[in-house]
Image (cartoon, one colour):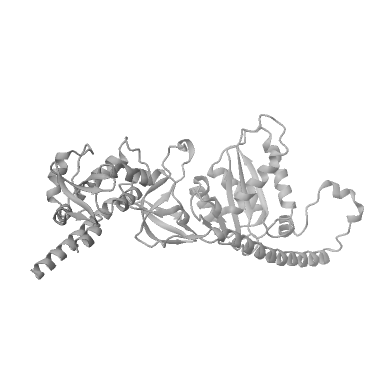
Length: 458
């Protein structure tokens, strides 16, 4: 019965832990704490633990482990030792095995290795800085485009080398059904420039949209863009800040036009890239898209874009005919093209989903009230190798749709701060102190139960 109780003693049996500012223990402090610990006294009374002798040595209770005698440390001092052997400058916040190796050289208590693992997992410094495996990777979600022109994806790329005209950024928008792209190089990445591009290059050319999909960049989600979207009676969707995969269509377009521009830049100063952006957009809209199997211009405008060399071939020359008949042929061709494109898109999205979903992972279910770490990639001038990449703890408030969660930060004082994060940005938050306190309650309850049983047997 005693061994069973000790096996369950993986936490403090003293409600108020001893806190030492120096984080260094002396024999005197341990000698004073051991008599107050019911865990230590149980071991002394038993005289052994799983074949290992427990005895007194120079006033200290020690246990004879296979590696030699070790001091039996009361639970009230565990936190001090953890901080000294893991968090001090001499320990360096190394991983669990290293911390266990340091502690086990001097001290012992039941289930030491398990307690060390729990403490290291709950270390605030390690959790906010070190890489952590993702616990949840949701399956791929395909976004349906609706009618042509209903949904556009918007994003800005840069900064690039300063061009001759002073441009440093490129703003781009893609229509979801046809994959039609528009882009413009600008000098500054501001909300005013984005709004001007959106109105002149999208709305006034292709009609008002119903939905605008952007990431969480400030120039794409500020008051200027919000007012423009409201003026157009549309709505803006920000799936999650700093999650490029959520607006992958326009992110992939940025990669395509940059690859095209690089092939034609001739200036070593790289200040002529702005001359080729429009050509890259033309090439993109005139090429078959891998998802819809047709050219974006064919789906948006009803006709293919021609290169100059095609005009030299007289065999391709034809008459449009009367406008009514041309209009009928155009409408019929566009209907056929979009049906074909929809079938191709469904097939391609299924293929992509099968490939992507091989990496899905469901390590745990996240529920309201759970505490988590939130991945916070460094940005701007502070984006160095020494920046802490995780912030927390944050408490889950509720699901926000599309595998996103509404979170309340608990690592900052003042007014509550709410954020939205994708599930793949969240990992479990482990706090050692509550674990120890809860274990202490379990130990006390088990000891009281055994003492009561002994009295009844007596």
